[in-house]
Image (cartoon, rainbow, N blue to C red; front, side, top):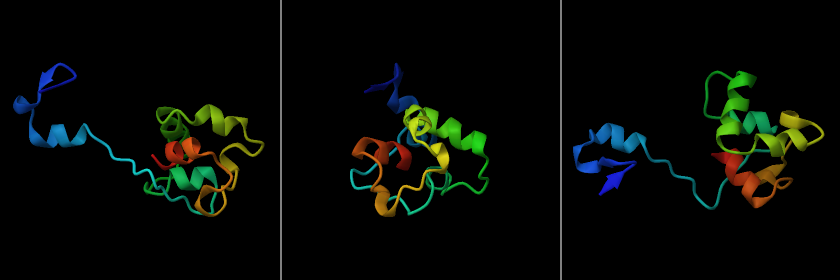
Length: 91
């Protein structure tokens, strides 16, 4: 089996495990700003890093379209976002 052209049996296990991510279908967002939810797991809450993470998750353009942008409060469990937006913010 190959991953991006590399034989997975020849990859170091730590490198292989870092190549995967998991995003459950049932996600949870806090009643906080979009920025706060994106930065939740990070100790440094630098806005530039938050925006880079949003771009990587393909949700930056959606967030920019909101009147309050990254300061938009999403409500409990992200009720103000679509299903796809919730998933991408939770990534």
